[in-house]
Image 1: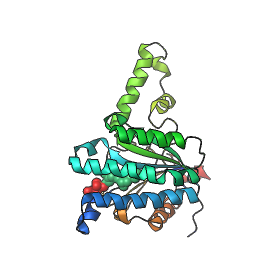
Image 2: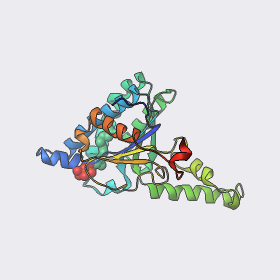
Image 3: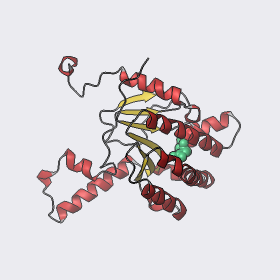
Image 4: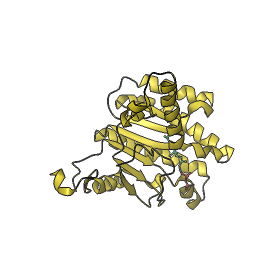
Length: 240
Ligand code: FPP
């Protein structure tokens, strides 16, 4: 089937790297390495098909609780990926963005990220957003504090707070709402990802483990998305 309707904002919970590695009798870190190849494929697809926003859940606030060795491996993989891919990202007109709380990240990771974000900031193609040390509740808490501060400083009236004001203070203030959210590996959870932004997103779950996820699987998700009717609370006839 031909795909004619693409989401503007695609978000992915990339799950199953550990299980993939275990199945092959490999260390978990190797599952993440293979997972990075799926990231490359999905990003390539978004570039080729002009999907403007791709947001990936790469590291949650809860992931800090994993064994230190695995956290270290993930950090190194991220640095390696960014350094290795920077030229390619630039060539493909990709802009890099990050959401989350970078404070806990090692200097090397922070510097690499900030450097690549800066290098790609004038690009106008797909925006790749990496959610790193990200949790939606933490984001909402930060948002509420930012708004409360404005009220406290009498720059904003309580009555003037509306959904647009909230949107403007989220980490994703410059991204549109999510249209399609994919989660791999047969888990049916949101796991504290983009809670505000997925209010009207279509959800797609697949049993495929993230390291096995290819362009073909992405196309299956996009076909499912295209065949759905998004009513945003209205009835079918009102959409015609
Ligand atoms: C979930 O699998 C995946 C993660 C916690 C990390 C995602 C990271 C990558 C795909 C690495 C590369 C990312 C970039 C942006 C280069 P899991 O370990 O929870 O799997 P499990 O549930 O099977 O244990």
